[in-house]
Image 1 (cartoon, rainbow, N blue to C red):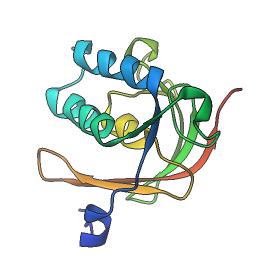
Image 2 (image 1 turned 90 degrees about the vertical axis):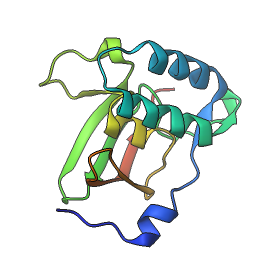
Image 3 (image 1 turned 30 degrees about the vertical axis):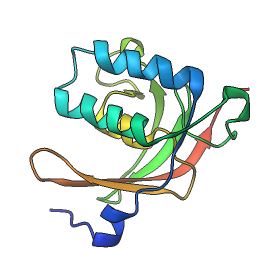
Image 4 (image 1 turned 60 degrees about the horizontal axis):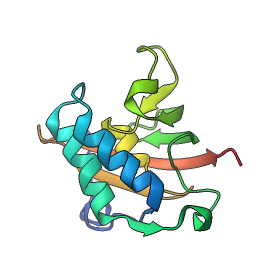
Length: 137
């Protein structure tokens, strides 16, 4: 079992989301019937605490839909994924991850070097640390 320190839990990094994307993701969360309610609630919580900026002012290294992200799990495993809307996930062996999934919601708005930790509804501890982000122009 992975443990979280109080520092990990209490110091969630500030996240930024573009205004247009914020509206689109709020809608996606409210209509995604494939994910369980705890995962959707996590995305809505992240969207609620996000700093909303004009889309043109969003820094280039912020994770957003369409980003290709290299990240590390609490277990030390590293993954590379593309963050997409739920309807763009093409099967389980795809490298695409839905923004309404637990890792997708956790990655949203982070920058390289930032880590976010959380406890799921079952009491399990999770964390992701962003290593690299690539966004298209």
